[in-house]
Length: 569
Image (spheres, rainbow, N blue to C red):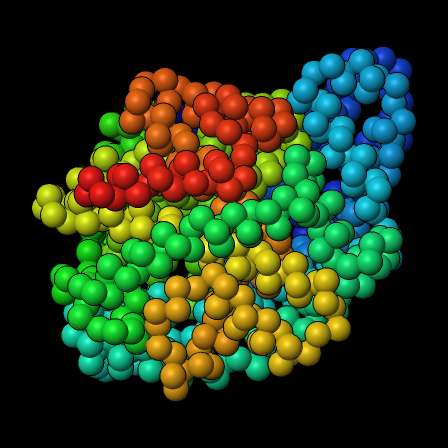
């Protein structure tokens, strides 16, 4: 597909944001403009949306470029400039514009449209939470949280004379030779231990600032503030606790059964920490591709077969150079799909090294990307500002919808079945981790004055509740005690994690539907994604053909379905 940037109707085509004065006139225009009719108001909303899209895309490119090369001082300064010099000046104007919107009588005429109703609801919540004295603190948190990526990106080990990123080194933990796995584990542990204090100190600093933000906004802790700030209109703190309990009662026993089967095949009484990723039958690690180009080409073929539109989306991103797929020195860890709201074509960033996990990451981020394409023509930027429960439904569903097409990467039938089995087992494995991370974050902010030692004790205690008890950590307790530090979300995007668990349940429903009626399931999936955030989360799930439900009864039904499919493999 051929995509061009839409013609700007309000902002100068040649705008370069190199200082605040370059964008100030646009905010002043919006703030001072007379709105004498419904048409005036709709034009005002459109112009504001255009400005939002341009600003968010400018910030996005600064972040993308910085994460591709964390060693560049110039790129780091460019991003820091936007976070420290531009965003704090935008915030007061956004609040004033929100107040202007809230006071316009024409909003009531538009409330009958669910899209506008949801947008205005979010605006009112922003007004409730806004505190001018929080602007510099939020800016400081945004800038400081990026230190996590810099610290993590600088981690590497040397193995057999080769310098490896931690992403690449982690693949050695899948090797069938136990001596290789153990050596790699020890090297990884040694390197990570060097940064334990740095991560602890960074989190303590972020914790202090976030608590201050919450107090300034009238909340007793940051958890309560963040639940509101994330716009969780459709579920509560108690629902989160219920999710934790459901995972413990339903999923953990299944995870233990799966792990026990693996342990028996491995011929050990207990796993050692370096045994957790190896194939228990002694098979070599799955390697679905070798290069980023192979990953790209295979993904396009695979997506074409699911729905030609999906393949076209990824091909367009490649043509526009909106992909950076391979792991390399100096690159920030992890992977993401970054929406670019003006052009409407997102950017996929990841650290592929040829592993099975990388293939899953690609289709996951591809699901996010397709979401951006399907919703790009919505009238307002605010309509596209997705809650994570909806965003992750798109990506996690794509992981499962694509599974039957993984034979493009696994030409051997045994490897193909093994890859699908590992994917389903990973869902059972990840749900307890998601719940543990979320419960840990609730504790962190509810118990603001905790010490580092208490934090470690809590994490270890939760590990016993969510773990299988089948791993012998003797001599390596410090690895287990600090494993929370590997979760980027705790540092950079607090409380953005349970959404993965909620969306995983929805994705299982989408996949189950596809096995019963593929055409209808794909159609429902696309219709839901086109909506972005113009309906409530439960409504979007319903249109996708699934329930927005994370009770133990619903989770048990889905878990039984996964176990049935595992038995078939």
